[in-house]
Image 1 (cartoon, rainbow, N blue to C red):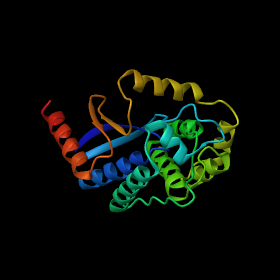
Image 2 (image 1 turned 180 degrees about the vertical axis):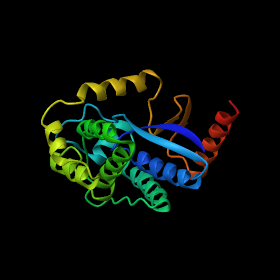
Image 3 (image 1 turned 45 degrees about the vertical axis):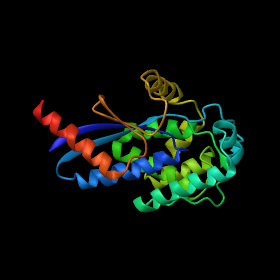
Image 4 (image 1 turned 30 degrees about the vertical axis):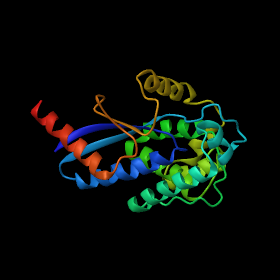
Amino acid sequence: MTRLKIDFVSDVACPWCAVGLASLEQALRQLDGEVDAELHFQPFELNPQMGAEGQDITEHLTQKYGSTAEQQAANWESIRRRGAELGFEFRKQGRGRVWNTFDAHRLLHWAGQQSPQAQRALKKALLRAYFTDARNVSDPQVLLEAVRAAGLDPEQARAILSSDSFAREVREQEGFYTQNGIHAVPSVIVNDRHLIQGGQPPEVFEQALRQIAAQQQVG
C-alpha cells in the first residue's frame, strides 16, 4: 500500500470545497487497499476582511463577482446537484449571509494537533453547519456545537475562542500557501508536489492519486 500525504487547502465558506472534499473522500474509498492517505486541512479565507456582522450573500456575490441574482441561482443549483450526487446536502433556506471564518480556522488548526481524523470530523461538521444547516460559523456557540459533533473537547475550544490562540499559526499557514501560488480553493496538494485544483469529480481525483502512487512506487 502506498502512503500519500494530502493537504486540502480550503475555506469553510466555500461551497466548491464541500463538493471537493466529498469527491476526494469518494475517490479515497475507491482506492482503499491501494492508497493510505493522511489528509490535512490547511486554511484559506475567501473573505479575510469580512466583519463580525457578515454580509448579505446576494449583495456580497454581486460586489465580488459582478454576478446577477439569476446567475447566482443557477450556480447554486449546479452546486446543489453536485453535492447531492456525492451525498452532501446544500440547503439554501436561511443561508442569507456570508460570515467571517477565521475562528473556524483557528479551531481546525487545534483539531489538527489532536489527529488528522479529529480535524476531518470538525471540518465536515463546520461545512454541514454552514451549508446544510445555514448556521453562522463565526458564532462561538455554533463553533462549539461543531466541536462537540466532532468529538472534541468544547471547554478547550471555548478557551481558544476567548483568546488569540493559533491566530499567528493560521496567518502563517495562509501566507505560506498564497505565497506559493494558491489563490483559489479547493486546492489539493499531494506529497507537497502535485496540485489538483477545484471541486473535481471523484474519478479525476482517483486517477490522479493512482498515478501519483504508481510514480512513488517506481521512484
